[in-house]
Length: 271
Image (cartoon, rainbow, N blue to C red; front, side):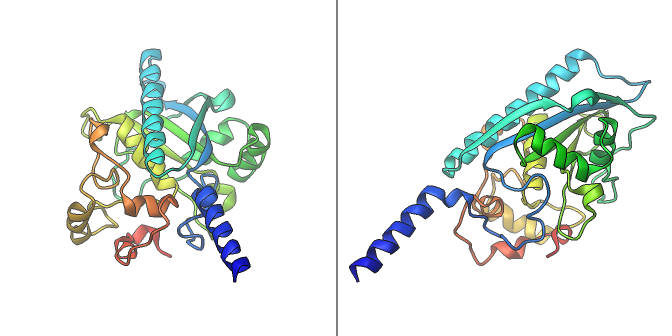
């Protein structure tokens, strides 16, 4: 009996020490791709896309990188609330830091946006496809936890390009987000908050507000249960927001599952 008690206590201690590495939903098909676990060191590669008629100014690029760093700082703070170690390393996407395209499509939040931006930018950096880019970059950077941030000098609703089991690895295994400079109506947007929100999508977080894939009923319930969750709303004052227990569970930060969690699954995160 003493031996069993010792083994139980020892196993419990291991869970306390290493529990942050346990994914809440290990069998979920979305637990795949280059952005696998939001813990330890995450390598972020960024690039800027523009058109010849509408190029980035250096001052604008500086502001966007500052917004990225602010978003990452907030994510690190939130991870700390859940006792999860998290660090970010940032670097430009090799020789493709700034890429010019003939046109940049506008994100409208319809769910029908183009989702091959990451493939396009890594090909511009000299890789055949996303799978080769992930394989080679993982070795070069000594890290297989990689995401790409594409800043578009255009107006639109930003979105994440995530990977799930069963999708084409050549096209989509390298995960990333597309961040527009302004909203689709030309209004300024809380870039840092948007970046944090979209990064969380890559690691399994669900939208909790009304979208093409989420219902008003679930939005109303989220407002009741998780009123300050960043997946429900964004804000210029990021200190008013947090990663609540549902989103933390989706990220693998919170190991306590509640019966209602799965009810919030949106249509675009089908099992």
